[in-house]
Image (cartoon, rainbow over all chains, first blue to last red; front, side):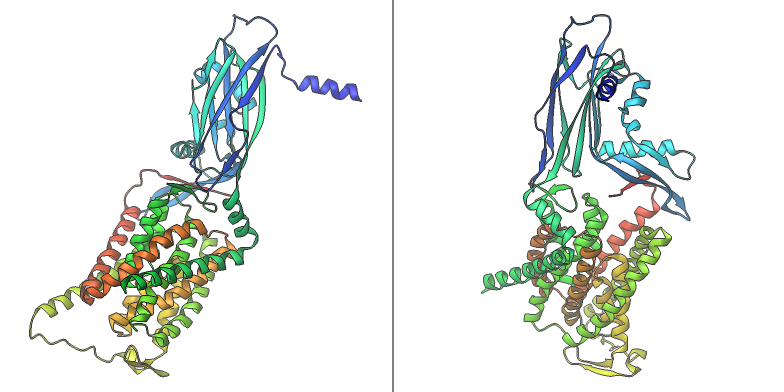
Length: 250
Length: 303
């Protein structure tokens, strides 16, 4: 039995283990505080190998960071009776709330499309199960990627990884301020001629802390109390301003 | 200075929020409108999720209206009796409105309906007020022209009459209750306090003096907006207290300035300004519906 499990473990490992990733992250968690303005995550590492650097093939490094998956509705407006209204809808079962993919060279050089299908590396591959009654669902998917790219939530950073001597690599990925809470997954792929030869995964928890955490919990667990507290603050502030101005006038 | 909002889950500039709050506060003090019809679109514009924007602006409306109401109470320009009658209608109306809203949501296209409601009501009310105030200013400029007193219409012939001492009216309670209900329904559908409908309705339909109208409208708005805030907090968890706090710090200060500005101005000028503002917002919303948008697609992320 133990031998069988060991066998499975060996099979599960990538085929070529001659070159392996050794990784470091500048921070292993992101804390969202009241003054959170986004965060830079520095991903750096080295390629560990027992043998000399193979010179027949091109080495590539790909780094991806993905936020938690969410369902998304994509709407398209059309002109009806002179006004622009939402007419067509496409529902996406799961799309990452954040997705950045950085490479050491142009995407087509470091990643074969078959490997992309298997490992879901480029942004369109991370969006799962598009459904809806439209003939051109590709346009909707492109719109989703375009809108999120404009918001800084989807990033395609081709050539953003510095790869030195085919051994040391580093890149910085900017997490924007409009982050969703959750467990973010960082993946690092090592490729040769577009084929994945090693993969490394790690998790980066993104959590609200302090006052932000407390308010969020209060709003969800003690909603009535939270609502009344909001009202009390509103009335108090209204009264306070009136009283202060009353004193200033005298 | 950027601040991360815990419920909205976005980071925004604190001074921008203070500024928006202040601007809306000035309007609230001057005209007796809660400012919901202005603050909600502004919040959309700076990237606050719509659900949070609607719920939080009702909380902000409570604060700025309360601050302005206190100023009006000191000057004794609040008709408490009329306010209470309007409020009874308003609460019934907003309960009906919430039911209607969820029914319309099940049919889809509720956003469109809200926008059309805005365009229609802002347009009609803005135009009516604008024309009326222009006429009033023209009359005032002509010396010797007689100010024609409003005739007693159907409003004054209904049963259950009550004396509204502050307003100097002796009319039936049925019209104020109906006005309150109507505003309550619209408030629930459009996510606003309803001052911009309430104020003209009180002036033109009930014949109340303009100076009393503003304080009375504020009195009623506070309760309707407060009711809505708690409803949103308990059902949708979409009230962001940090966002509200920043908006209302600006708002309450603005409201105090607004009230003082309002006292210095003539009633006609006040009305023509409000009419211009209402028409401006209406025009903006109408243009959005009529002109081809630059981005045809929009996203709603589920939780």
